[in-house]
Amino acid sequence: MCYSVYICKVVCLIWQENYELCCFYLGEIYVCGGFDGYSRHTSMERYTPRDDQWSTLSGMAVGREGAGLVVAGDKIYCIGGYDGINLLDSAERYCPVTEQWETISPMTTRRSGTSEILPLCLPCV
Image (cartoon, rainbow, N blue to C red; front, side, top):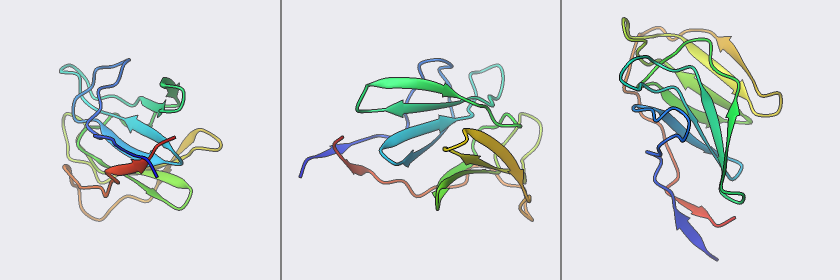
């Protein structure tokens, strides 16, 4: 079996973001949020390695950097972060099927710089 190593600190082709969030879901890499030196982004992009193609998806309700991005079940969750003024307790859930975000219940504590569990070695596609 062939394995490739993906480094999740990817550079988005559209926004050139820093502190962006990254996760792997069903063979594709999802990147959202981040800070470009001027503003926190709500944008989300998906990279399909098979096609070597980036796609722009619907954005989050809140622009944020330093949040956690994790897959649970068939949804992608963006949790906490920093909006440029405040640490955030808010959270959003993305459905890859409908390509829509929804706001979910906030955490009890505001936080930024959360960790995600990301696979480092992924099967070739």
